[in-house]
Image (cartoon, rainbow, N blue to C red; front, side, top):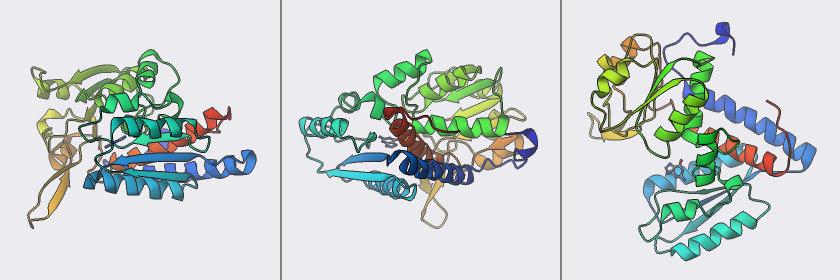
Length: 299
Ligand code: GUN
């Protein structure tokens, strides 16, 4: 995007960006159907009844269908054995109507999540969690990229353009967000620091950041005086805290009002990174379907 088209608002509108991304995906899906008789399909597997997971899975199914793709939901009881779950994954791997497979985490404790993730065909691993896709990201290969970091990167590139030479600090080192985020930013030629719970002076590390990505899951841990003037702040946290009226309130990992005083750009919670995650899941499903059929997608 050109400089003039870039937003001059401090707020980075992930919700709006995700909506337009989903529209573009729907257009590409329509073209795949028309020109190649191909409808991308996403299978989502939910084991057990975790309430937050049920909400996520419902939203994923709804948005998948709104984009014109097939959604296949598999709900299994919380007593499901690892053997039975692996059998379902093997079946989905072989199903030509299924281009993307997502097994919702967390899984019940009798199941080893890594064993299940690594049983998914890497070309259908739309979460990008398979060890082969982690390896491809680390070595610059063409793989599936985890949805949340991919969404963060899209927002950063839309806001800042070329990220080359910028100092990026990623707070958090999870396999799902922190580590892949660090690698994506490194691939964009940023100088990357990954800070975590054992980092000696985390506030000082954050102050040096041109780009700060907070993904620690601790409500409002990042204070205003941790933000360097003019920094761009991406808040991955979605934390439920008690609100004034007794109802739960959502806050990020960043104390938004304080940070917004110093930052040049900042994502809100809700309405920032959250909506980007499902939009990127749809993007990965579309990408997976096209790659499996040797079809080049237009940009
Ligand atoms: N549980 C919470 N977020 C995610 C996600 O992005 N992928 C999967 N598979 N499970 C999740």
